[in-house]
Image (cartoon, rainbow, N blue to C red; front, side, top):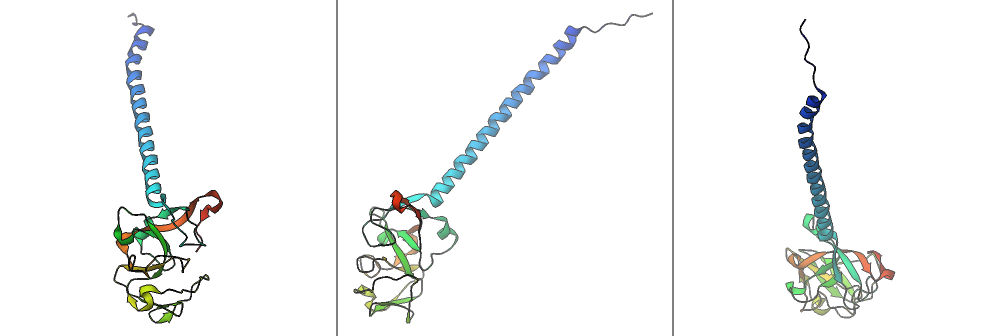
Length: 202
């Protein structure tokens, strides 16, 4: 009878060893790529959140009392105005006359593109009708250039400070109607000081 050739254990072991190392290497590379991808996703997400909702501005002066105090640091919502248009009552940050070197100004939108604005007898008129605001603001004693009717252009907004008699806003030639391109974003959150921290109340 023919003798069976016995398979040596050493041969089996030797044959299996070379296949294990490449599999381990592929697994390590796969994990590294996965971690890299996850890190990039987190970085991208953080960038998007900070860019669209985390840009900060400082309110200067008392023109927005009592809604905002001088020195308050606020956060802007940039995304809303990239997807839609500013609305009446929004508190916005803008660059006066599009200046890239001066400080941003924070005011409330009163008039929208195409509307006619006038201030007389301390009241705001929009297209000839008295504008009744949700909150109680001081009676306006100085209408400025809005003593005469101002018709806003296609992409222009009329803004006022909430502290109506201590605010440099669209009533004055140095500011005038605010162009859409000059608006940086909508104020949505007060970041500091801590005693003022919270969502902005209309």
